[in-house]
Length: 238
Picture 1 (cartoon, helix red, strand yellow):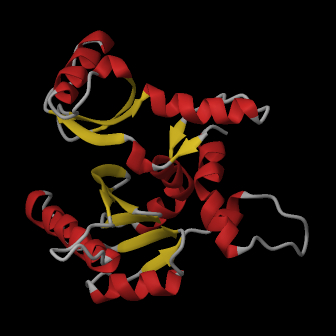
Picture 2 (cartoon, helix red, strand yellow; picture 1 turned 120 degrees about the horizontal axis):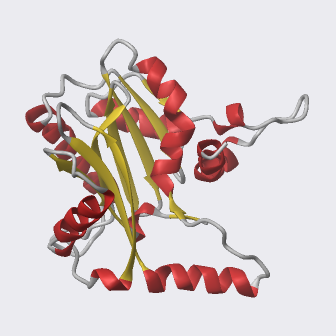
């Protein structure tokens, strides 16, 4: 079960020193999250992965999901006769799918971005030499002062804010390349929007490279974009 990013709290937490034990790490993560979420941690399921950091530090990718949200999905699938064996979120699995290509594009040390454009939100991940240095998920549907919604304008603003943070706080020197997964927006439209924001060398993610198709068969591009997270979930555990 691969869930949308925007129903989870996903954070990249930097720790200047690696904790001495898993228990200490767990306590530090929970302490930091208690100040960042408007509900009790006992009401949520917490998972995290320790990533490589600079020097003595480590980065931790943390995912927090409300238990009742997971239970709603599990109940619906149980009624359909399906038992959930794994619960995950979207973009980390798109990242699994794109790891090899990201390594190729960033082989000379340049920063590479992964954009995941989905219904109502977008997620941006920036990697430097294979290491995640930036992770942000933001809503792209916001009303203006008159109550009208301009999703495109909201999207542009959020991307610009993210790129400004990358440049000013993370010493980013632009993006060497960008990979895109897009549901609902044609890749050509996404490329044009990103290029208008100064982001070039944009290519779409192609999950068909990870799927054994019969000779002559072709994966529909729209279907491919929708199933990309599921293919990435399988690829990440193979």
